[in-house]
Amino acid sequence: MLRMLSEPTLVTLSGRPATFIAGGEFAVPTTVGVNGVGAVT
Image (cartoon, rainbow, N blue to C red; front, side):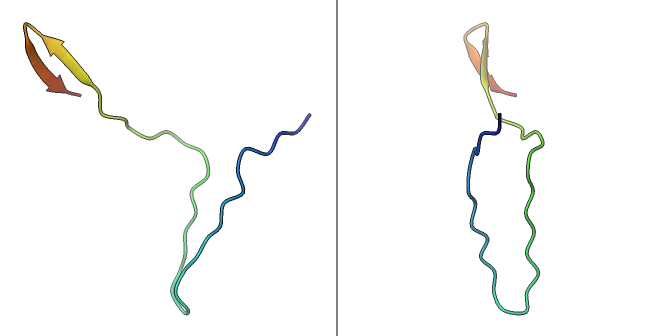
């Protein structure tokens, strides 16, 4: 079974290179409270 997750469109300026990264991991900042003080990790 195959499922299409997205149909991306890539646009670039004429004569300029374009890149497309599919998959991988991206860091997502989260806030963690320690002793009443918030810290972004």
